[in-house]
Length: 180
Image (tube, rainbow, N blue to C red):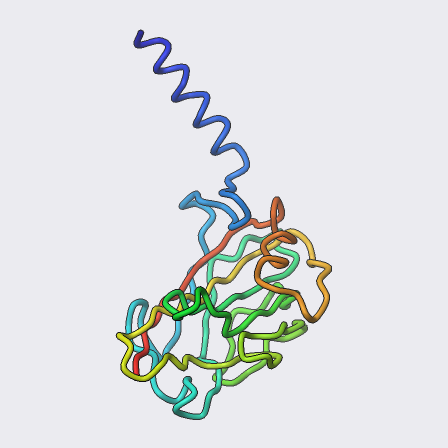
């Protein structure tokens, strides 16, 4: 019985880990991680008002490290996981220059195409949860890709994930919280 169990485990490891991909979300291995940070807030911390609909509504400063050398471009996605009617997109951008290591507050990613957010506008739209809700979780994911995704400006997060399937070299996240 033990050899059968061992064979099943090895088969799963070989089948699940070979390409380092999980569904359409990109790699799951620790070796394929990008570090995403902000000088405005720590991971899991509170997003300052300036970067929300209650403030200047500009994107926070970001830094990205650990991007693989063979990266062709970067993509990013900022989503509210706790929105009342399901996940809400606050920022969607792709074809970001592969050498982009930092973005200043309010800076548009260089070379990028920015998609339409959940507010119906192109570009960044800051956190804006309903008043009285507990603080929402906002997850910013940065993807390193081995090609420039061919997407139309009205692409959705699902379109981005589909375009990145099999082409994500690494990814990293930064989660912040905001409540009103």
